[in-house]
Length: 579
Image (cartoon, rainbow, N blue to C red; front, side, top):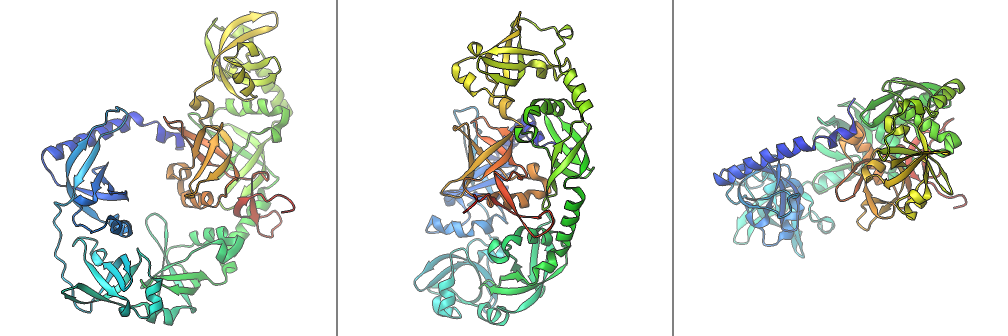
């Protein structure tokens, strides 16, 4: 089983690999070798590109062609990403900061472009790069995947089917046009394809075919020739939107679905809406109901799967489990339950009750059942065994805070030995903390680093040396975070009021559910409280967190259909009673 933490354990190998790639780019510069590159993203003055596995920069002024304004690069950037370009490494900047990599600059003006031969009345696809009062500038270099560079022409507003069509055009639109002629003013086009298709199809019904690409992404066509989009949103389908999305994703390649054509854009892109969506999701609803009725409230066998410090739970040999260790469930027994789970070896089978199921993602929220005899045996195994422990005076140990009182904290350093010697308890007096703030912030469940000071008539005594590093304190931990969206819509959260947490959507974190989890994260509203797992802490103290299944009614709720137990459809913040 792979671990999400494996992506952070290859840093040394990655550094060596990057150094080899850097050396290859340096050599290509010395020998003036032309190398291929692909555009990754646009910046204010140029493009970030990927050349031989290394990120580099190509200024607009060193691209194979030029525009009179840098703004005209923006609408074509998405199309450029699909093409391969060529250039030479012209400059390397070294940073004074040894932690920062070298910056490579590429000159793509050396790239040889093919000659474009335009045929009168032939249809070409172009991207709108500028809108003027009397028409639009169109670059049909897009039609040739930019192998011929930029081919800019003018489409006068009188050459549109009607004035409303012209007014609806936006920068970045792809338009199908007829090449008319090249005169002293340049290339002229006539818009085609919009009015007839819109008049013929808009408001009618059709069967759209699903085409799945190599990544499992869905694409749609109408009559096997027109590209189509099938948006699934709350505005179109209400609370069923996520369930409909799941149902569509489960349809096989080549399946046909009955749709209404809502619109046809000037680039012949059809916008569709499902007809009778209830029929499409009936099977999904039936399966979800069976899943809920079979498991919710029932006892199940759960396997604990360990890989390093990562713990996963496998329910009934096939479903992902989520076991929240919180006081609201286990109350005064929380500490002992945490010890049992943390000390359980790989492939241990435990018995749990299924509390709820996120049917969209088939994630089970489970509650651990600890039988009295097992609880007693484990508790006894964690009682002090000084005869088996050889503690070294002033030696540093990691401990688990299991009780907080007015005069200090009781720490169990059995945690340091992974409970091999059972429970090794001692007192960390409040005067032995690094400072008063550290004592105030200390709470049950914290992991602390202490020095062993010996033993008196009351038992063992510890002294706090320092709170553990951020990674020791937080990495792998589950936190409740209140999300905040900034003015740009970026989702973040704060930890301790001074650390920033972000929500990366990576395949390594979410696997095949990456796209679903992305939609889930984007649906979170400002102020929503969510459960997250800390998966990495970067050198700048920025936390990378993974969103966990949400079932706590105090945080976010799952809007359900009318079934016996409820069916997960859409995640949104809990609305207070009476609102």
